[in-house]
Image 1 (cartoon, rainbow, N blue to C red):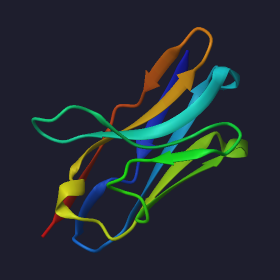
Image 2 (cartoon, rainbow, N blue to C red):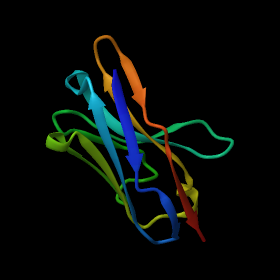
Image 3 (tube, rainbow, N blue to C red):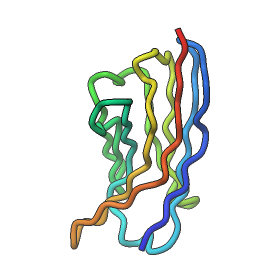
Image 4 (spheres, one colour):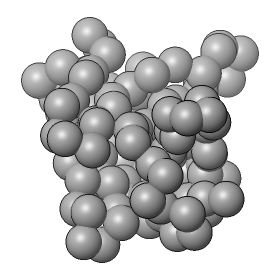
Length: 117
């Protein structure tokens, strides 16, 4: 089992910045990919950014150039630096850890990010 605990959400004005953190514990050696997803009211959960154990990153088009995902393996932590925030970035942000074999997704409890216009 893998446990994920997020922090860093909050209320910010448009154009501002926030940094989300996610600390993993438990069977962390089984994890390959880690990432962030978000879910706005009335919408499906969507990918924001992911990073592999080797450091390959992937971003949603809507956040490219504004958000940066990073991973500190020594601290078992993944970060999401969010700059130039927009009201449409408002959502609950979830940390994800993925085990490859067998394919298993682990989720954090979510942290609210609200961007005011």
